[in-house]
Length: 286
Image (cartoon, rainbow, N blue to C red; front, side):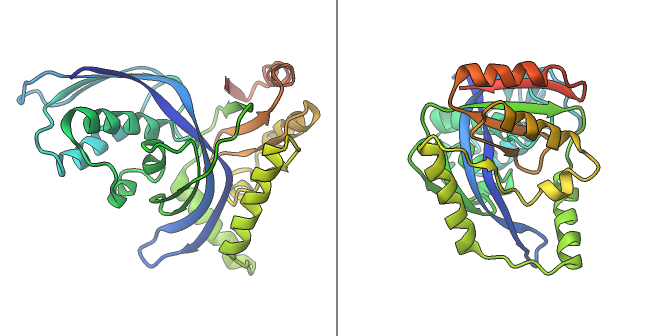
């Protein structure tokens, strides 16, 4: 019952945040796009109840509780036969980047538990572990995601496109970013229209399928996350000048992305981004 996995990641082609609910959470309407990442997770049972679960993390440093332990707690509440596990995680992406890297690790673990221990992960409550996990643990490569991440409408895939993801040296705090959106909306009257957000998302998909430029993609977190960070707009200028079809902020940040349909153009953009001293890493995913 050993397993070895490459964790998936996502970008949000669009991300619209709806009103704050009485429970404090916000629902979203977002186009999620998944690709296989580069982070590795190996899993094996070790059978020693006294030791419990063991996690060995290599690469990027993780502070605080790892989401893998939260996913295991959720899983065991539904499948108590899951034994103590020894896990080795190779982290390549910084935390707080908005690409769902940690959620992708958890998704890989949950898919392992589904395969070997019969865990039912087709469950709406999975979004309580992490809003990105239901999508990342599912079969869809592209989907309209709504609610708290549990409502997933698969879309036909986008083909022939590649991403560049840029990781700044700073991190984004998702809770603080949501509070920032609430603060901005208290200062200015904002009309929230889910139907318009869907139409907006499908028009962007139409353009990308046709190889047409869509430019800066809508993300309600951008105004909050980019405050005092002009570097984002330098990166977006690089995307446009390099011939990207689309670009934007993923999730609540801090990472940004560019979408290309030409490898030479994407390599040109990477060479320009490599000169930026505020970026700790750039990654291209096809």
